[in-house]
Image (tube, rainbow, N blue to C red):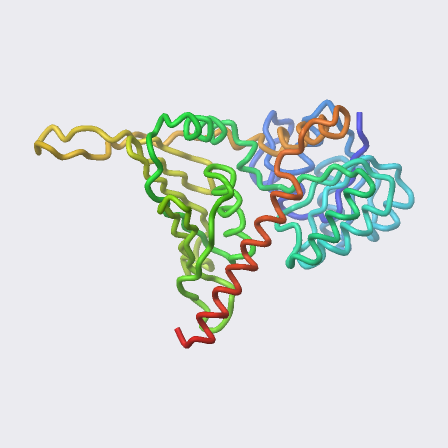
Length: 329
């Protein structure tokens, strides 16, 4: 059993479960919940600079060892794996500090870093110290989506035609989920191109496209109303089916293309009911996967290289945005 610690006591690290599940539960959507459900880990300590958050978190998860200073936690506790759940702008510093201790694994929230230089430094120290690193792009561990990915690879839905991916919040945050999802589902041979910005001259909330060499593409559309609602939705059009993902991938429908019974020579989308995907224990499968990477040298799912690719793509997209801005478009 590996000894685990969490840095950052917030929603995704543990408090979302408090809102959603009554304990005990066989499901979890957070780091702390996954540690508690897994037979492979013991959650030993947590750290946060906010005393109220720390108390709320430790009481809910019955964690006895709490620290306001995460470096004190690292000095005191003999931990094998650390979850990094701090704000994105602190990922690099905390990651580098954690990597200088004798840890075996790091489970980091997305995005890994806010720029490529920081991300490459994080990869370098992890490689040098043989630390297994996984980034929480959690749709990769959703078994329903894994099944869809397998059927895409087996050409069960026919040729991919087009995707429309919609998101709120920012390009570096929620859109990074969708970029990673597209990379995972459809492969890496793509180019991102800027379409428009919803924040005048800022690269923050942008529409863009991901194009492939065969001429297919995915449009990523920012919905500029994220103070009213938050979502990450996908529509994927194939020759023989249309796949919809809604509510951040919590629900999906696979709608077959069939002959129209009214109009000859027409084909229509046969609407099917939304089904709930297997999302409620994705963090558990993520951490168990990382456990086997640590103990048996299995391949890391949602690896640091996968995350660096997303950062590179977003940086290239920002360069496309700047070129359009300089050209007065």
